[in-house]
Each structure stands twice: as structure tokens, then as C-alpha cells.
Length: 299
Image 1: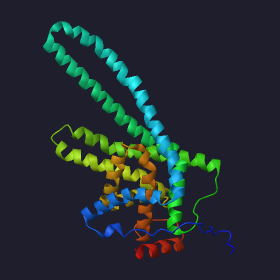
Image 2 (image 1 turned 90 degrees about the horizontal axis):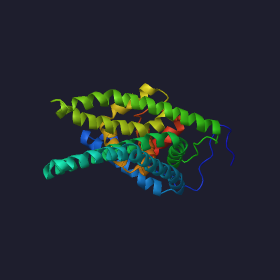
Image 3 (image 1 turned 60 degrees about the horizontal axis):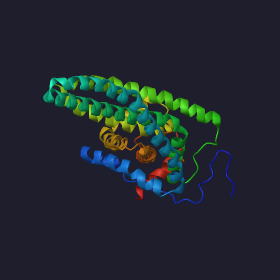
Image 4 (image 1 turned 135 degrees about the horizontal axis):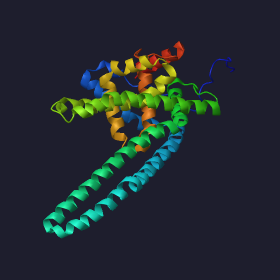
């Protein structure tokens, strides 16, 4: 059977997936729990499709390599010079007596531990941020494949080197913007955490971080189907509890950077589920939206 020039060919040899139930019909706690469930559900979906699994392997390896590289650089640039600076001071303190020597050893050890904590934290964040830019073509392919599994048709564009470069540039710009927005709120909250207002500022800072991580992954699908930046942000805050739950898992998963591809898949499925319920804007054809609604209603 032939297809028209503007129509994508159906995806061959796949089992079309159905969407989960509407995650917004629950209360605040329920929506938070639904966000957790969606984030964790990416693992099962990836392992249910060989193409998704193969597309996930490269960015996983890239993230692991980036993390290892940042840890090596941090150890050589920060920790080792710090140890070299502390050793002479410890030797000089040995003449002050056993108690002073023990105190200096404890202090030096604490400084080194804190330095490693800072290096590991920065390495994790850097691996996630740099990896999201470098792996942009693979993440787009993962998101497109996830859509194809739920729509039953190919949604990917033909390969183009120019499109790949443009996509990396677009993601670089978007990442910088997201980091600036995140910092504009996170830095003041971090400062307030050292004041009596820290009782409120600290949990708010954590919630804001979770929302940022959710935005980092869900924005990928929305950038392709919801061109308006303000519209994407509006969706994030319209479903704060849902995206906070999703972001909590994403934040914890950042300590295992190879989980990023799983979260891209999970975020795409979350976007499609909200789309089926008419909760998010889209540039998808009306026929595709109706297809998603039918598959969501049959769950």
C-alpha cells in the first residue's frame, strides 16, 4: 500500500504501546507519586524495545566517560594540590604535641573529604550538563523512537549533519538558559539557608532543584512540539507536584549518570500522556493526538 508524500510510513515490526492513566486526576500527593512512577517507568520501556536499548548505550557510555574524566581532573587539580599544601603544615604541627598533631590530622582529613565531596558533586553535575549537550542527537533519537512506539508510525527526520550540529547548538543554548534560570532562584535560596529562614529555604531549594531536573528532561520533547518557551514553563508550573516527583527521581539518578537516557524516554512518555489528556501544547497532527487519546483511554 502506498503512502502520500506528506505521510510517514508506519513503523514496522513493533508492538504499539499504550499510555498510562491520566496522572493529573489524583491529589497533590498522588500526582507526586505519579511523577515518581513515570520516571522509574523509563527503565521498563527501554528494555522492552531493542532499538531504544541500543540508542541508550552510547549516551550511557559517554556519561560514564565524562564522569570519570571530571573526577580525574578534579582529583589532579583540586585534591592533590590541597593534600600537598596540608602535609607540610601537618609536619610542622608535630612539634606542638600529640593533641595538636591529632587535631591537625582530623582537620586535614576533614578538608580533604570535603574537597572530594565538592569534586564529586561538580563532576556529577558537569557530566549531566555536558552529556546532555554532546548526546543531543541520541536523546532526540530516543525521544522520537518513544513517540513512534506510541503513535505506531515513524516520526524521525532523515539524518542530516547540519541538523545534528543545529540540534547540539540549540541544546547548548537551552542548557545555558535553564542554568541561568535555575541559578537565579537557587543562589538566593542557598544564601537564605544560612539564616533563620533556612528552615523554609532549604526544602524550597530542594523542590526547586527537583523541578529543574524535570525541566531538563521533559523540555526535550516539548521543544519539538511546543515552540513557545513561556508555554513550556507554564506547563511545568501547572503540574508542579507531578514534575517535582519526576524530578526527585531524576535528581537521585544523577548520581548514576548512565541513567539519563532512561529519563529521556520516561519524560517523553510523560509528555505524550499529558498530551493525550489535552494538558500540554503540541504541533503534532490532530490525528496523532486522537490516536494517543484512544490508546490512553483503553488502559
